[in-house]
Image (cartoon, rainbow, N blue to C red; front, side):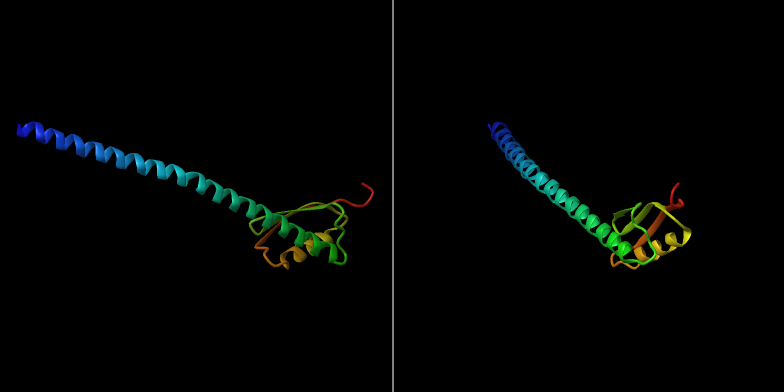
Amino acid sequence: MKASTAMKMVGGALIVLASLNASAQSSDAAAAPAAAASSAATGKQAKAANRALGRKVRSALAKTKGVSVANISVRARGGAVTLAGTVPDQSQIDLATQAAQGVAGVTSVKNALTVRPVGQ
């Protein structure tokens, strides 16, 4: 008789443990979409910040005397800015780099500009 009582107690304890484990999993599953939504919002914020920084650098290049921005593209990612395209002479490459470095939020500038004389 005592063995059957002990078996009932053990069985009851196993049922309680299984139900606790199941409820813990369901609350973890509910937290996963919230975390995914949070990271998506962070990704959108990062893209928006990169676009804003690119616009600031492009504006600074346009205001820099002696730099032709017609064939220059600006890409920003986490403060790192890449300048690509062509300019008519070497001095504009140096001016563009200095102008980009002077923009608030720029941590580094990679200059991939090349010299291409006008008309070629």
